[in-house]
Length: 232
Image (cartoon, rainbow, N blue to C red; front, side, top):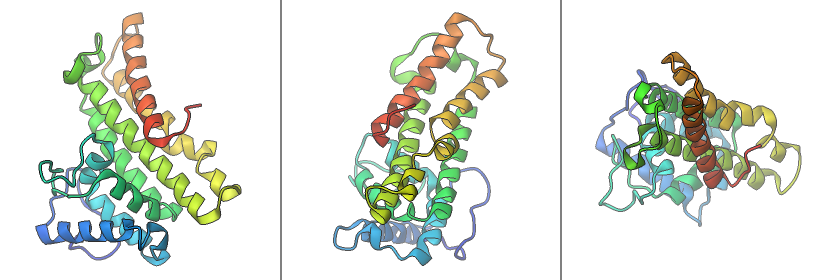
């Protein structure tokens, strides 16, 4: 699926472009484990880490799928850079299988946060100034996509544990515990935007604070929409 030895990590920070046959193999594996007759819960525990490493190679494509509003299994739409033809429900089902392994899924989450941090750090002073600007509002766009992605990953971890341990128990609660939420939830996401604004030397005024609050609350709203969890 990646053309690399199992467990190897992608190099660099940019999108990884893989050979077409490797991308099609990734699609096949995702769809196979997401199919109702097989089920992500039947993913062998021994390969979850390898699946997580594969996701890190297709990170940008997976990010588009889980954060977008279109069906990427439709040939009219293409993910970048590998044109992965998988719908969001199918990708989500696959993620739930990987999410049963905490360490493996941590690789996925850190990879996604690396991408989100790159996007946030591309925002400039003008993106933190003034009111919302509709479809051309870059900061709000990043907040929406990142909030949706973090929400999907949080829900995947929760549902992965739920399928493994039932409706209750300490392991299930781990997915929503404060430590996990701080590490991979809205607090970390909001801090990325606040840190970027500070690094740009944005002067704290009522207007700039209102703008920053709008950006962070957009991320929170989209997190809640995809995760189904209330923001504390």
